[in-house]
Structure formats: C-alpha cells, structure tokens
Length: 241
Image (cartoon, rainbow, N blue to C red; front, top):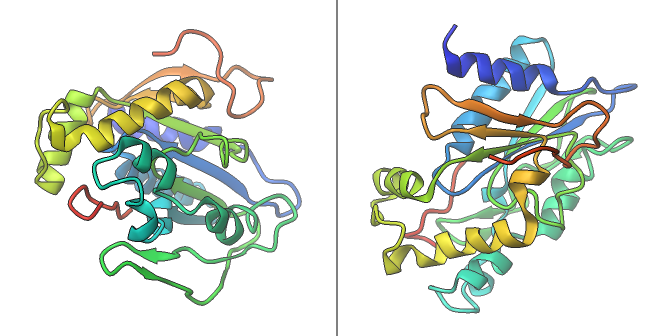
C-alpha cells in the first residue's frame, strides 16, 4: 500500500458512524491547487470500499453569477473572498438535506461557471447513512464551518499551488505575480479570518502529492472543527473567474 493510500484510508476510517440512518458531512478544504478534488474523489472511493454509500459534491458548482462575483472588480481579492460562492443555496440544496434528521433530498449543482447559467436540476435522494464528501475553497468559513462531522485541510505552500495551477489553468507559476493576486491574497484573508488549519479535524501536508503526511489530528473528545496542538470538482479557473 502506498503512503497516499494509507493516508486516504486513515481519513476514511475516521469518518464517524451515522445514527439511525443519519448522513455524515465531510469537507476537503485547502488553497487553490492543493489537490482537493483528487483527494476527495479518492476518499469517496475508499469510503465506498468500506461499504458505505457516498455522495460527492463540489462547492465549485455553487458559484455566484459573474455579476456578483466581479462586483468588487475582476482583480479584487476581497471580491474573491466575499463574493465567490452562494452559501445560502449551498446550505439549502446540500448541507441541510444531509443534516441529522434531514430529508436526504438534495441538488448537487446550482451554477455552470462556463455559461454563467443558474441551474435547477432534478432533486436526488441519497441513501440512508450516506457520507457526503464536499471539496472546495473556504469550507471552514463561518457560514458553513460548523456543520462538518469531519473536515480535512490540505496544507500546500503557495509556490507549489501556483505551479500546479499553471499546469492546470495556464496561469502564471509565480504566486507573487499580479495576475495571481486575486486568488493568493483572498486565501491569505481566509487564513487570517478563519484559521482553517486550526479548525480542521485533520491537517494534511499535501505538498508531495504521492506521499501526503498527516500533520495533526483532533484528539478524541474535541468537537469536530476544533483542532488542538501545533498547526503545521470542477473548479472555476482563474481564466473564468
């Protein structure tokens, strides 16, 4: 078994059991380019291999329309931090249906970032006891940070994430380049305001994609989303942002 498989398996094994058919909500957070979508997909496979039903959702399918996202300017870090996502709809379409005693009737997407169309797809019904795995930016911010039964933060330096984004999106590989300011500075705002590295239940160093390393795990008895000790989908690309 590879180091990556070991880490993924460890996280899958830490997802608590539901009670009476209740669903569980799991977050995979981290800066843009940290590997959230791949990690969440692999985690979903590992959870499924344990015989648990899984639902995969990305918050990148809940962007605001462009008129909202860019109302503070196309280069504004504060605009990226404040205006990227429709948290009200995300809560109503995804988080609340998977809450304890929830209906399990959810919609997985609300917006097409390429066409800027607002979507209203048919409602799906999750199986009892499903594990909802969500990947995306800013998942520990106050609007939604208190709902997770388990949360992961992938910690990767900006010089590494910028290079990954360059390969993925064709952006500049230098995190200090003016074209990257909107994204890098917005994430620094997030780190300052919300301290996601400390709020996450599991902090993972994902700089080496093939060999991620668990830096910190919440101790038993500590509520989800509150870490202790020393801290170590389909994305909207910068071109479309």
